[in-house]
Amino acid sequence: MAGPHVGGPGAALRRDQFAFGPLEEGEALVEPILGAWEANVDHALARSPIDVCSSRGENTVVLGNTGVVRVLKVNAESRDVRAREGALCLLLPFGRTDRFGYAELAYAYDEPGTIGLLAKQSKMDVRLLLPVPEDTAYSLPQWAAYGRYFTAWDNWHKAYGCWRTQVADDDPANHLVFGWGGGVAFAELMLAKRAGFRVAMTAGSDERIAFLRENGITAVDRRRFPALSLPTREERTDRDRHQQRRTSLAAFRDLVNELSDGYGVAIFVDNIGEPLYDVTLGALAREGVVATCGWKAGMRLSHLRGAECIKRHLLVNTHVWRLPDSPGIRDFQEAEGWIAPKGSTVIYDFDRVPELADDYTNGRIGSYFPMYRVNPL
Ligand SMILES: NC(=O)c1ccc[n+]([C@@H]2O[C@H](COP(=O)([O-])OP(=O)(O)OC[C@H]3O[C@@H](n4cnc5c(N)ncnc54)[C@H](OP(=O)(O)O)[C@@H]3O)[C@@H](O)[C@H]2O)c1
Image (cartoon, rainbow, N blue to C red; front, side):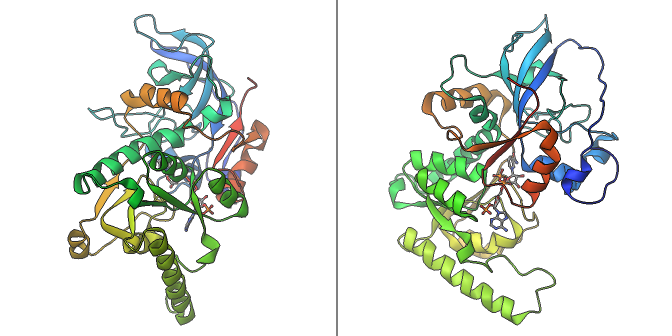
C-alpha cells in the first residue's frame, strides 16, 4: 500500500518493486506461498483505526502477516534455528513482544521495518518461522488459515479458564457458548464443542449456515434479526427503527433462552463490538464471560458497572497469542485435526488481490478463510 487513495480498499494497493537490504544475522530469505486475508490487512488499507504508514513512519508498507512461506536461505549461524532451507513455515506475526512473550506490535502491520507476504520474495526474522509438520495430514491451505486458529486458541483458553474460576465443576453440557460471526469465533466454538459445551453462532449467508451445521454448530441466521445492531447516528431519531430493534432483540433473546434453558450465554465470543455490545451483555448468563480479541464494528464500549458486577460478568480481552506457545498450538492442530476443514478455504491468485480486498470488505466471500497465492508450491 502506498500514498493517499480514493475508492475501495483494492484501490489502496499498488504493485511495485520493493527493495530490501542483504540478509542480516538471524534473518531468512523466503518465498511466500499462501497468505491469509485477515481484518488487519483491511484495517491497514482503510487506514483505520490507525494509519500504519504514519505510525511506522514509512511511505510504503508490504502487508500480509499470516501465511505459509518456503525458506530459500538462512543466515543464522549463531542460532538454534527451526527453519531449514527448503522448509515450509508458518509466519508468526510478532513484532515487539512484552516480557512474557505476548505481542505488543504486529509483524507487517504496526512494527516498523517489517516486510509482509504480499511480495514475491521477502526476508524475515528466523524466530518467526515455524515449520509446518513434516508428513502432515493436512493441505497447505488448511495450514495457511492458522492465524485465526492460534488467536482463537489463546482467547478460548483464557475465557474458559476465567469461566471456571466461578463455575468450578458444573458440566459444560448445561452451558451455551455463543459467537457472533467470523473465522476466529468459528475456530473457538470448535474448541468449546470439544470441551463439551453447547455451541451456536450467527452467520449471514446460506453458505455459512450450511458450513456451521456441517461442523456441528447450531447456526443462527442473523437475517432473522435485521435490526439487532444499534441505530446509527442518522437513525437515532427514527422511531420505526427503534421499534424494529425491539422486535429483533426480543426474538434474539427468545432464541438464546431456548438454547440455554433460559439461563443465557456462559461464554460469548464477541469480536464485533460496539453496535452489538448491549445485546451481548443482555444475553449473558450470570457468571458469564465476554471473550474478545476483535472490534470489527467499533471499539468504544460502555456498560453499567453495577449491573455487570452484580451479575459477576467477566470480560476477557486478548490479542494474538503468546509467541512461545506457537509450537504447542501447531502440534495440537496436527494431532487433533482442529484445523480449517478441508475445502473451506478460498484462494485468489496474486493478480486478483485487489479484488480479494474489495470482496472481503463488502462481505462477498462465503469462506471464513480467504487467502491469496503468491508463488506456486
Ligand atoms: N486481536 C487479534 O489477535 C485478532 C486476530 C484475528 C482477528 N481479530 C479480529 O477479530 C475480528 C473478527 O475477525 P475474523 O477473522 O474472525 O472474522 P472476519 O473475517 O473479520 O469476519 C467477521 C464476520 O462477522 C460478521 N459480521 C460483520 N459485521 C457484523 C455485525 N454488525 N453483526 C453481526 N455479525 C457481523 C460477518 O459474518 P456473517 O455475515 O456471516 O455474519 C463477518 O464475515 C476482526 O475485527 C479482527 O480484526 C483479532
